[in-house]
Length: 242
Ligand SMILES: [Zn+2]
Image (cartoon, rainbow, N blue to C red; front, side, top):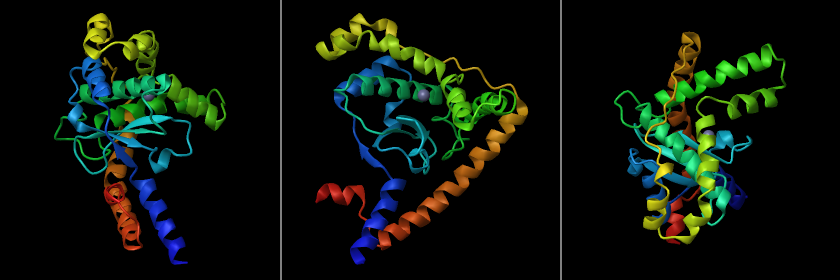
């Protein structure tokens, strides 16, 4: 019985706080080369998707940190840089970090937790497509959702860098970073050039949603984490030491 409670507590802990990991120096150099404007010290990497995305179709996502003003977290369902498609996913998610930077969502005093301009714009553009998909085009919920994601104004440029980077992948694996960088200067993304959403109602709705999440999420998660630890869940740090 005690063991069952501890396993249950550990599951709660792990689904709220995914396992952090560090990128290799090569990937660090790659991101600094592709997106030179971004302050990569404000980005953290995690194995496993956040609890609210586990049942969805995403294989990775770049979300705001719940407990800080400026950090961004990249979550991967799984991550192995030796697998080319996962490195492409990293480059895709890192493009979203450039969008965070461009929308002053990781360098502003008006940002906290999920209350970031990046997320407000992302949601507003998402609603702009998903609402007509459901009510005008009569699409099913999951098709409407996938279409609104795949053709999202902030997703299409992230997807367009994938084949661009993919063409040079073999060379990335073959050459030292410096040689690679000299050959592929055209891959550098200086800016993300995002259009701001024009519909004030959708922007207001997105503002209310992100503000509510920014306030409620840390409270609920902290309570759940406290209970989990009291019931015997171990932190990632203590498990690493064992
Ligand atoms: Zn994306």
